[in-house]
Amino acid sequence: MLTPQWLDQLRSRTTLSALIGRSTRLQKAGREFKACCPFHNEKSPSFTVNDEKGFYHCFGCGAHGDAIRWMTDHQGLSFMDAVKELAAEAGMDVPAPDPRAAKAAEKRDTLHDVMAAAQGWFVQNLSAPGGESARAYLATRGFDAHTLQRFGFGYAPEGRQAMKEALGKFPEAMLIEAGLRIEVENRDPYDRFRGRLMLPIEDARGRVIAFGGRILSKEKTDAPKYLNSPDTPLFDKGRTLYNLHRAAPAARQSGRMVVVEGYMDVVAMAAAGIGECVAPLGTALTEQQIEMLWRHVEMPILCFDGDAAGQRAAMRAVTRALPLLRPAHSLRIVRLPEGLDPDDLIKQRGARAMEDVLGAAKSLIEVLWEAERDAQPLYTPEDKAGLKARLMAHVDSIQHPDIASLYRRELQDRYSEFAFPKRESRWQQGGGGGNAFRPGQQRGRGSFQNGRWQPQPESTPESLERLRRAAAGGARDALSAAVLAGLVRWPGQVRRHAEALARTPGLDPRFGLLLDCCQTNEALETSHLATILVENGLEIPGTAEYSGLRFGFLNPDTGADQAAEDLAQAVDLLVERPVLDAALARATARFESELSEEAFADQQRLLKRKLEFDSRLRQMATRQAASS
Image (cartoon, rainbow, N blue to C red; front, side):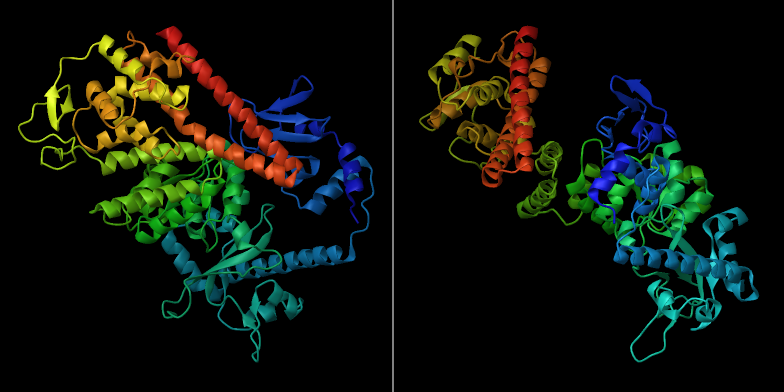
């Protein structure tokens, strides 16, 4: 039995840098070694090997492990094969395995023999007289002899007992367990695959673990067009990607991985020279399959048919990926022209057309926005509010706080541009409340007096400063007060940040009044905003509220473009702060209730982010003031 103590001894006797250095060029860097990561394509080294600690780590893709993990993840060995190989090199004897584990391993090895024999039989049948229909179908696909041999095409003949007769040396129970025969109560077992073109499904080491079969007879309308093996001790369709053992080396050369909908699409792509191509097996892309893809490339490309089913498949992949997103790791998505699959596109327009389609892959957030925007008619305010609710529900599923914050901001900006297009002001149509403009009224700077708009002279820096001094002390803190004052000073920036501010909890109530002004298309002006604040019993933020922070956008000498850029940075910090504070509060509560190392580490990580946030705020204010 492999005890933890024995495995630790095996690791201690293995020099990790020497093991990894056999296939990866390492460079000494202090007490560690560095290299370009062998698990994903990169130009600058982010992969480190530490012999003292006995682990490797990539700061780019997150690959991490010890000597055993290296042998399983990089070399493609099973756990026991990796242990045996390392033990042989270290001069250690592998303890006798647990009897139950040994029995399970023996069963798997025996099932591999069954699958290998079945594959040989299928290939033999393809060239036999009975395989004429399969060869005729392959001729219509235009695959050359090399492609047929490389992917191992075969043929399962008609007949319910043909495989049992051909593989008679194996007990029928093994054929059933391997998924090759079907056992039904009160009936004799029969072959699963009959009258089908066969393709082997292989694991990361290239061993056959399952089969896929395409029906050839057009008369059999009651049978599925494509049929895959069921889950077995060898095959878990949710954790397997077809063609990964061939695509992974090609992906390391090209830096990309393409995911198509079916294995025949994979073959068509490979025949056209695009070898870094894989496919799920009869299911939507699973979380495990996404993680497998990210081990090889950071941005795999998902390629879907251009019909409604392809659109649904794309959205299923998006929703599966959102909770898993991490820095630099996402998905790109393409949709083929409607009515075409990869093979059709390549045949009609050539491999260059497929490369052009792949080159135009869209980001995950772009596909998410377009899919939800086009999912339902958007005629009424309720329809548009539903769109926003759906978008924010997707954002809430993202686990990484920084990525969730960025997605929220981006989708809010897109929604605002869509939901509030430029149009004739409702004030010009006689609507609105007590502060509404009415036809015939004079426009420009001024204030409301006795229900009527009274024009005022152009505001001056002195008058603005007087308004600020009159309302000093109303904001909660320096940052929100400074942003408020900045928006009053630069009213053209209010609409730009309206959605982000509206989604931010706990803001000063004065923000709400400023955002209400965005509901019209009237040109916002400083004196107008100041008057609205005062008339509603709220004060304009004064210099005392943000005297500790000197922001460039409050400097009278700052230009409009620079002020807009500086103000946008301040708004980003204001929006980020409640998210960070809430996460820190949850982590602290968890630590106080659990008192675990994991909870403490989570709390400390967020405390560090809070300190970094405060430092960024001080640096930004100081930098902007200096530049101004």
